[in-house]
Image 1: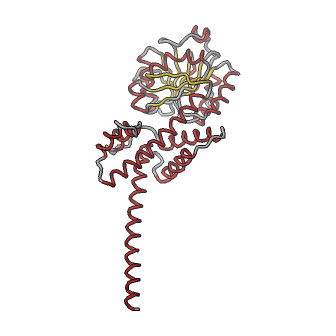
Image 2: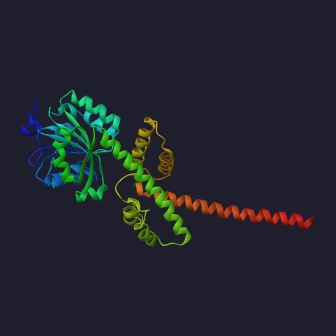
Image 3: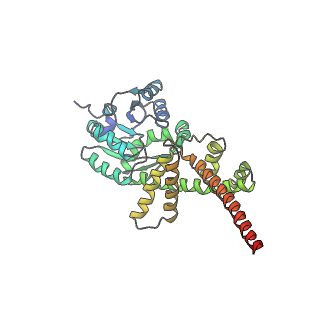
Length: 334
């Protein structure tokens, strides 16, 4: 027998502290997000396939549960921090979470899902009286830990307003960017820009290194100039120069979002010439880097290309000398 909706669920009021939230996905970002919600006074029912992750959530004050469907018990909203649409659909449809959600519940997909899949989910959820808000985030693990994520929300104004209070506990900026699927579309487009920035910034910085410039000096100047980006301001100083390559966001997840973004352009009949080229290069990198590579490791791949090019140049020069020597010998014999 399902639990009756709370007053907030019945009236559509904003979900302030004291409301019950379900949470699925306790990874590098999900775990600190749960901590912020508990600290704000929410009752959080949390699930992850990893028992260790559930234990960490319990240490933060959440109530761990053993199945995805169990997070729905008494929940006014259910937040999903999962990698893609396939994972979301598996949890909602195959594991029974959507069936367990009560009418009046808001499902909040905070991962990087396909916008069209999100719209399909919203229609299916509406048949059960459940609303969907897509609210992907930008800011990475550091933003999740600090509670300073940028949240881009898609859905009706009423539904976004209901879940705004818990979202504001997770992010310094919560922007309602449009209807259902708009948040996921914008996240993909943002990551296409971010990935392309990182690629071209890294090519330029590596070229500068090869010329003899010091990376720290280049970054200081660029970050006060028009060439600056999140890649030069954060990714190179924090993850590339120290050699840690541990931003917490996988290269293949970045590539997935890039493909979604160029797909949106293609469907709209718009050219995405640079975007398509960036996807091709990131795809080549993904084929050569480890399966669990961080997205900042694209710089390692670029260095390998640079080293291979330099080695090839050396061979070509060496071969050229040999050919030239042979020609001269032939001339001498003539």
